[in-house]
Image 1 (cartoon, helix red, strand yellow):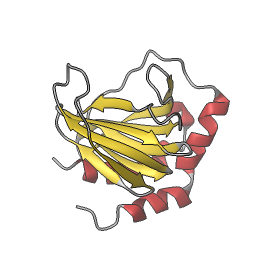
Image 2 (cartoon, one colour; image 1 turned 60 degrees about the vertical axis):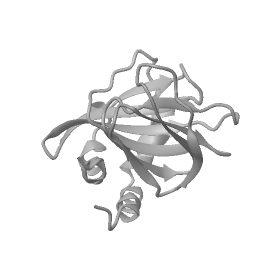
Image 3 (cartoon, helix red, strand yellow; image 1 turned 120 degrees about the vertical axis):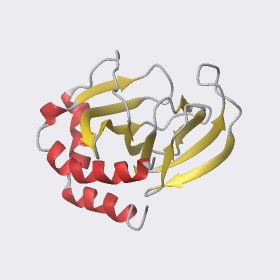
Length: 175
């Protein structure tokens, strides 16, 4: 499976998906640091039910990184900003494993996670980082919803045809 292909298709679908903010749900994810503002919606991409997540990851202290394992296959592109990434391999039901790296990802960097044993973290450096993630799963959250003021900048970033074209250019020539 190549989640990068699905990521590219998700970007092309953003034109239609950002025509109506009512198609999107939101969450303020603060149960781990750094804090993440997330908009998400469901989409069928290449016959696969997926969730598209638009994320604003806040820059915080150097020791604050959001660890997650790849319970579902996913792909992420760094749309704006610069971040540190760690990778590890371990039990998805256990504690985060020792991480390799760090790797440093800038605007236009992308990656896919295909196994539930793959762990990673992203930690923005200096300023918030905007990412787009597509995953093969439904996403649900019990966190509070974002306010209209919190939603607006993130939604407007992805509704911009110039930004969507830039994202497609970043993925030009991939798989």
